Image (cartoon, helix red, strand yellow):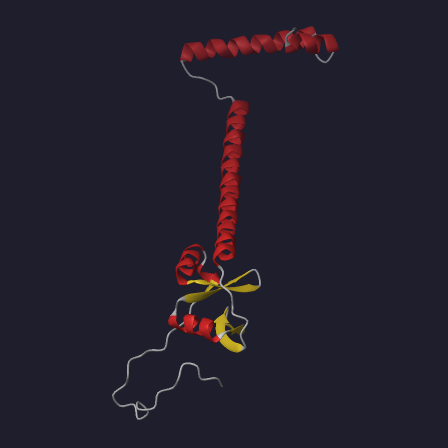
Amino acid sequence: MASLQEQFLKAGLVDKNKAKQVHQEKTKQKKVERRTGTQSVDEARLAALETQRKNAERARELNAQRDAAAHQKAIVAQIVQMVKQHRQSKGGGDIAYNFTHDNKVKRLYVSAAVQAHLVDGLLAIVCHGGTTELVPKVIADKIAERDPSLVVQVKKASTAIDADDPYADFKVPDDLMW
């Protein structure tokens, strides 16, 4: 294969005098570099190295974003699988159980036994993908480790009795419906 210089000569893009002049300048520059011991800065090479470094940095950033998206997708899949495997029946009851999720009061109709389990903390409510499911407390804790916004936290009423409370003798039942 002919050199690039020979190919340009054959194509008629440069003439012999111009090629000879470029060759002489190149040899002079190399001779000066050998005498002084310094190397000339090759701007094209430096620009290529800088471009390569920028491309590598961009590729790392894209890979990190792709890995984060894959990790988030895996977490969502784990949550869906846990909910599907461990969801409990709502009992088909007619007792309305009110709870708050995302600053909204929502209502779930459950049976008396399921309501008792919710009040006792044996069951927890998980809201995912527009659906509301009941799962055991252990599974709800595992889901909360992955995404705490999906699990409804049931706040228990404090059992501490105030000494100055004039209504301390009158207990309010847990199943009181308004």
